[in-house]
Each structure stands twice: as C-alpha cells, then as structure tokens.
Length: 297
Image 1 (cartoon, rainbow, N blue to C red):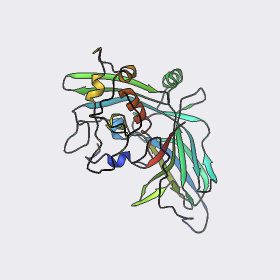
Image 2: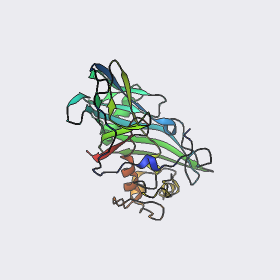
Image 3: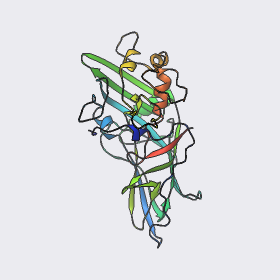
Image 4: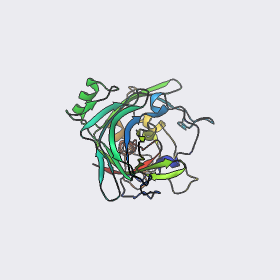
C-alpha cells in the first residue's frame, strides 16, 4: 500500500492544456552510437490491484472514510510513439491492446528492438475506444472487448465502495479518447524527458494507471502547496438518489458539482459526472509518477 504523501505531485499535469514540460534533456548518452531495446509495459498499482483505503496516519486514502475495491480496470492503449526533439521517429505501435489492470502484475504492451542509442525525448501514447481490431492482453477477455466495443469505451471500471454498513457498486464506462504526450519522469533524481536508450540496454517504460484519480477533489493541483488534493466519495455515494446501491454515470451527471468540496480548476465541470469524466483522462501516467501533457483525441 502507498505511504501517506501529498497528492499535489500527482496532479502536476495540466488537464487539457497545452503545457510544455521542461525536462533535463541530454544528447547521445553513449557518445559511441549503438542500439538498445525499449519494452513498454503497464501496471495498475496497489490501489487498483488491492484497494483504496480510508485515510490514516500510515496511508493516504479517502478522507471521508470509504474503501474502494476494483474488480475491473480496463484500459485500451494505442499509438505509442518514440521520437526525438526534431520529430525523427524511432518506433511506433500499430493498432491497440486492451488490458485489465486490476489483474496483478506488470504486463507487456510492446517491445521495440534495434532502437538507436540516444535520448528520445518525445514519447507519447493514447487511451482510445476499443475497435474490432483491438488485440487482447492475457488480462482481458473476449467479453470485456465486446462490452467495450458496444459502449464505445476506452476506459472502464467496475468497483464496490464500502463505509460502515453501507455498500455502493458502480460500473462506469468512458467513451472518450485521450492523448498523452511530452511524457517525462524522474530517473536517478533528475527529470528526464521521454527515454534514454544506451548501447545494448533494455529499458522498461511503464505506462502506469492510477486508480485513485477518479476521486480527486481538484482537477488541477493548487499552486499553493498548503492546499492539498484529497480523495472523496461521500458526494459520489449521495448521487445514488434511488438508493438501489448502484451509482450510475447518469446519476452523477444529474448531480450538480458541490464547489464547496470540489474545485473544477476553471475547466467547466458543472456536474459530478462531468468532473469524474474529466478526472478519467488523468489516469494515465509515465514510468510511475511521471506526467504527460493531456489532450482530447
């Protein structure tokens, strides 16, 4: 389980804004050429594989006391690209592949062999709706794929939230497309744009998904470090107006956003449903806590 920390660093990306990430780029790291391999993988982190707990002194979780457990966390990756600052492309992924990141473990997306040894500082990928041509990873099923096609979904969660003697179930499919570009991450204490390939190396680049983002109370981190981002579920649970124990996206769309608890950060999310859908675009990260510039497809 993740230790207790500030969420501010997790929301450093600017949502649907054209931000350019300033990173410590480098020239050819070997000085002698050569080739290496880039292995793209994905992982769902402990919050997705196990649970998101209530907030405590030991772990960061829901400040209003809820626990969330996922049974599905389906993400469809496509169009992974590796390029340099001049736009020269080293590798790209054809088609798409569907993953259930609730299944434990790191999962392979694609390997690129014979990549020139140098800094490739323009790495990007997309989370896009599933199509008939989408490939299945070992973690997803034919039924998952058909459900995603029928709904036009790129991202889908099935989960149960509990608090005391209250249980709420929800299954949310998001028919959105999101591009993650100008990705960067911290490597050996320095901010690194994209990925650096050295001669004869095999570099893993993990497209990490973050299951806690759907419950943030801000769409962007506050510039004031004293204002933290928290996980909340009370308002989401309250959207279940018919009290049947099932929270639908239609019910969230009917619930006005409580701006006393939630900050849309000037991005125009008027309802709880619009807010959650905006947060759904931020679930993709880069090599753990690394970030990318986000835009709609």
